[in-house]
Length: 251
Image (cartoon, rainbow, N blue to C red; front, side, top):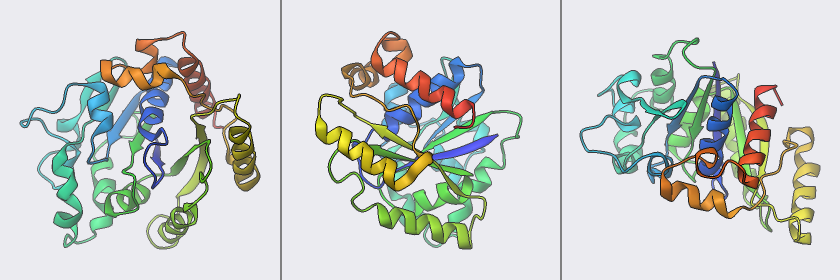
């Protein structure tokens, strides 16, 4: 079971879109996939289903020890996911006094057997708080999602510093497994320059597949569908399927 956190402390870079559609792409390739929505904004959850019924179990309940991981799993066409809810927004404060609070998500994942899933993808919140720290403590790989725009690398040093601290103190398995470039428009010279800078900075960690800016990717969530369900012939579907193949084959 390969565990991956998708992260960037900036919002609007395509992190949730990438989590959903990489997961769906891996499922199309025959892999068993679990997505976890660790963002209090719950965009992944809302993108895949109507918003949570209050009685449902979410990642919040599992972190609080009020539910087991399997009680919170929801089925979606070809893959599973654990939803989030607005209750998670208070979790940073609620969990602050818990012993070993940075390892709560790791404890949740340990309830899932290795052979149940091939891939677990975690959609992190757009900040470097306790929830993101939990994700980094629980996974093997981090995928950093970078928008192909000016300032893409701005502020990234804080994220890389946190990764180093987690590697040294909490999770020595942790590695930056890949860089995903999103919202790319080949007609814009600036986009080409930015991707060039990202490739210079991260080298072969940058995935060959670059996700093009595509209106279908923006529309699919409002229909509670993955890009493959919404428009399987779109550039968005082609790009995320190619990226899923890269990930399946070990980059």
